[in-house]
Structure formats: structure tokens, C-alpha cells
Length: 239
Image (cartoon, rainbow, N blue to C red; front, top):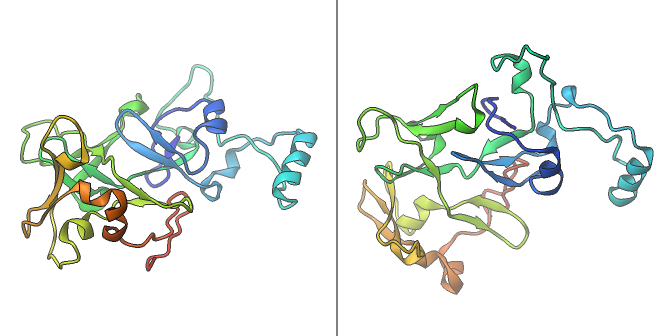
């Protein structure tokens, strides 16, 4: 698997896992990051081998329609025997994925922010893809090694299959304006209950427990579904 933005190898999946468990639109929980498998429009068809099975192709066409032209294996470039090099372009070929959710939390200072906030850096280990991670550079709670940030465990979804990041800024401020919000996500207990999880804003001092987002009351708290499908890069911004 390869990060669709930075084109770095971030992990490995068996072909059977791609077919049955982690297909397009699936979330893959890697050791240090969480990613989503992107739609086939992002797949590199220059490195896919055709599957020559006429009966299988006919069965797929009968199920999905005759617009299906061919069947292919996932993008892959075989390593030259005895000459594997993690720095070649061939090593960047794979199933495209993108980090999701985009919001992460620093385990040291509790900073809650999207990956493009400007303080997170992607650390790539070309020899061990499972060690690829995002770190919080210049975290004020640590000295020396930057802590690895973790994806947040809250998302929003609707019955139509749409999936989106949790609306953190709007949720904690309850519709009030805040100039340059800096958020923190803290857990006050050990049970992991949503009543013990609080999001706060350093800029204006706003605070809110996560319990308000759940149950029947949560329907009146959260905004309209944006119709987002991250793997297809589409959404309806106005709901």
C-alpha cells in the first residue's frame, strides 16, 4: 500500500485481504497510522496485469453491467531477485491509500488537529514500512524525540454510507466564532467512556464533553451530513 499524496510505502496486505476485507473505501488500521483505500481512479493501471478469465469477466458484467471492460490484478512491481532497493520508483507502486481520519492527537500534550495543521511531520522508514508514522514536531511536553501522533477515535457517518471527520471546531464552540482555534482532547477517567472525554480550545477556553454527540440528542448537535466519500474525493459542503 502507498500513501496517495506522498507516495511512500506504508504497509502490506495479502491479496485475499484486499479482495475480502480491505477493498475500496475500507479503513486499514496500521501500527502507527490509519488509512483509507482509495477509489480505482487513483490506482496505477500502468502496473496492473490483466486477469484472463472470460467466464469470470462475463459474470462480473452480468452483475455490474457491460461497461466493465477488463479485470486486473492490483498495481504491483516484482522485486528484482537479489536487488531489492527501497529507494526505487518501483517500490512506490502499490494500492493507493490516504490517511484517514485526518484529525490526530498528540499523546503527550493532547493537541488535537488535522494533519495539515503545520506541526505534524511524516517520518518514513524505507526499510520498515510498518514504522512509517506522523510525529508532533516541537511538542512542548517532550524533549528530544518527537512523539508519534495517533488518529482520533471519533468519526461521523450516516445511513447512506457517507463518512467524515468529526466536526471538532464547530462542536466545541457550539456555533460561536473563534479566531485561530487550538484544540486539546483529554480523557479524565480510565474507562474510556465518552462522558470522560473532553475537547477544549486553548484560544477561547471553550469546553465540551463528547457525550453530547451521542444518542438522540446528538442528532440536534451535529451538523448535516456533507455526503462525503473520502475514497472518491467528493462531498456536498452545504449538507
